[in-house]
Length: 444
Image (tube, rainbow, N blue to C red; front, side, top):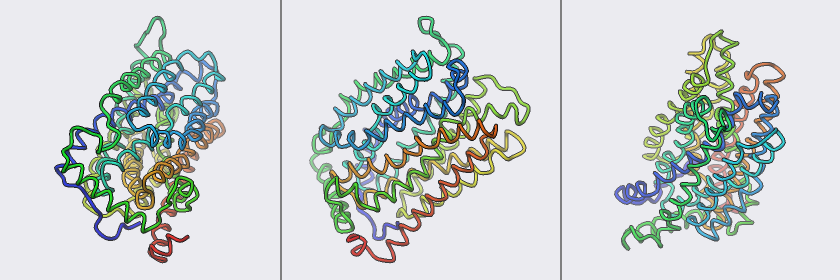
């Protein structure tokens, strides 16, 4: 989807002021979110044996998180539109932080399944809510850089979470609770603390904030009005219900499904993949070693995402900005586990991780072309729901493939296939856009 004419933007000075106000808290919130969501991947290194779970059963537990997430995604975002970002983000942070810590007390796999489902329900709405929240503060051209900062929270979670989580599993003790249980108990605390900070720091929208001048508020309003008028002329689902039935919204959901597939494979299974190096390459790793090695691909992704966001923000976003990184990631993941040494495998996984997270940065600039106001809240939530459904479908599949074949090779090839499908879909969307033109496409 080439954006065509030069898009509206706010000044660099105002952009930097908004970024310094919003980005640090948003990044920390999302790091806490990803940590509580994905720390089960590190816990699995010892939890599976304690709870007598196979890799497939672990995958099912990971999948149930996304079932709850999907079911409550759209309602949560509509509630944020209704009650405002400050109050709703506080609710999300507080409820998921408490439940995340309580998950440390599950006695068996059945209670783990229940806890993961409700954790997904409580976390639902954070990411699409933040995406929607940014649409209230700046137009798409400026959001590329902000989204790159926001998205870096995912790989940054791997950089920090991998060594920290495995260290806590090895050394932490909380009132006699140790190992993976102590790690999960402690890592729920940041979300609870952030709930109080978000309540006092966030502002629902620019018109209500006290740290912008009247002129700066007018500049934001003018830029957003121009962008919304262009979106209304192009496709404009005029209501939440029409947005939910718009085929282009569903197509973007398919693209996000493929993008999110790579994240699921890396966040939830990379620690276990690294552990298989022991049998594949004849090496021996401690829990802390696995954490440090797992952090490498995510560290590369952090740097690549920031560079990519800065470069792309100077250009118009097109389909190739999404399809290109997806294809690079697909190629890297397909060969990563077929190489001859753990060093080569980590290099390939690092390339794949970097490409995957770069594709997300640019992908989230596409929905605002066709969605505004309440339709944006519902449409972005639907896109996210379709995308994160990969989290419901893939973990069990990956675990089943591992249990059946003894390796993750075919599972990673399957992930690569979904990313190829996503790249084809976004390319076809742009082709269709150019072929029929905006007026005709709007009537479809």
